[in-house]
Image 1 (cartoon, one colour):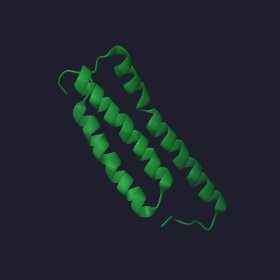
Image 2 (tube, helix red, strand yellow):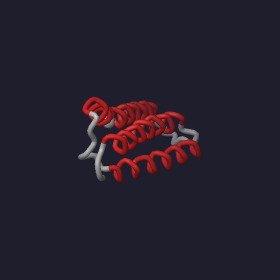
Image 3 (spheres, helix red, strand yellow):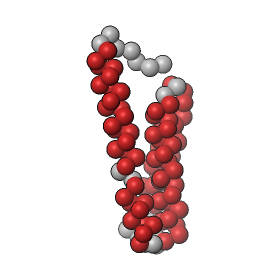
Length: 97
């Protein structure tokens, strides 16, 4: 159930903040994925970190689904996909984690 504010401006600001946070959260992982893909090297990437991120994203997706928050669900779906890609690239091109 979404939280409702008696102030429409606050709801707008909350939506704007959530949207910007979602875009930045997704964008934060793209450079790492691109760098690994381009260099075919992932030696300095922590596999454990990305496995934890995948697990966290899946839990956030469940939480978003339970609340009916499609933006939160989609944001974490994209983050999970990028994290899975990085983990696969790490296994394929990296050494130890």
